[in-house]
Image (cartoon, rainbow, N blue to C red):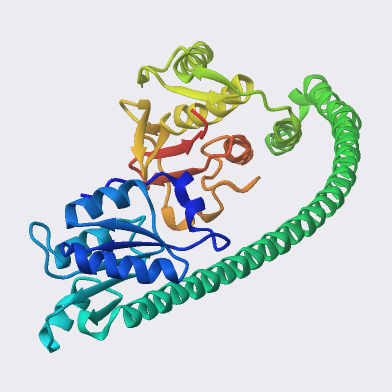
Amino acid sequence: MLRTASDTSSDSQSTLGPKRVLVVDADLTYLGTIASELQTDGYDVVQATSGEQAIELLAVQPVDCVLLDLMMPGLDGLETCRRVKHAPNLRDTPLILMTVREGREVMLEAFGAGADDFISKGLGSDVVAARVKAQIRRKRFGDEHRAVRERLLRSETEATEARAARQLAEARAALAEQLARSNFELAGANRELAAANRELEAFSYSVSHDLRAPLRSIRSFTQMLEEDVGSTLDEESRGHLTRVIAATARMSDLIDALLELSRISRVALTRTPTDLGPIASAVVEELRGRDRTRTVEVTIAPRLDASVDPRLARALFDNLIGNAWKFTAQVAAPTIEIGVVETGGERAFFIRDNGAGFDMALAKNLFTPFHRLHGAEFAGTGVGLANVRRIVERHGGRVWAQSKLGAGATFYFTLPGH
């Protein structure tokens, strides 16, 4: 194999200095004749008497053209040509094969080995020198053409890079302008949102104060009336008083539910890694304390880990477990299960009961405020599930339910970010 020549030797091939030609021939007489002819034409001639010697010289001494005899002992001209043309640093060097043999087959062998030209020794040394000159000129033209192409390509690349840089700068400027405009619009939206929140707080105060006061008066005076003259009234009149008191109590519950719905929408969200199990247990214990006459089997799975706002998580379980507790009131052996499952590649928490259930055909408005699927046999305002949806959506999750009338219900919700 050929050794790689040092790049620093490329100065010898400068177009400003004499061209160097390597002549390889085992015939010393012919070698001297060709060398003399080339030196007369101003070439710097390097001589070798074998293919092996030529390979060694080319490894350390680049040349502008190789003149190679086809018939040599040892490494012949064809194999020497192949090795030269397979060397990356030599393959572009013009190579002319010389031979005393004639015929089409010899010429095809020479070109098949990679030779750039083929010449018969019988044509004379002057013709050989002319062919060398032609090959060196062809190589120079090729080098100049390649240099021009490289300059053009470099110019096109620089122009493309400049154009891309200009377009990038314009795009960045446009994005910066858009970002500034978006920030300005966002600041305005934030101011409007803050104003809306202040108005909502004022409204909530008005609901809490202005509506509760007359409602308390109605209820108080009705109760006083019942205590003072209730015994003198007939059954129908006492029924009227009872309905008034019940209506004021329901109205008070609706006001509380409305305020809770507003509060959940406005409260700041602070997420922390939380085990939901203890929160669920606290809700269950509170429900047991309110109604000690009931025996409900409650199962809570371990490690209900989630990233949540603990206050909103408590409100979430207050509503969902409270509903399960309420709708199992008429079941002989009520059970409530709280756990987590994998569904659709995400963790979904669930509260399952074996209570009254509901018809899924009526469930499209299940989470709509003040929409109820059951009648007066189960107390409620229709706001609890609306609160559940708002809490879950504020955490970036979703909530849904599966049920069958008379066969219980299961509520699922996700809390992304665990």
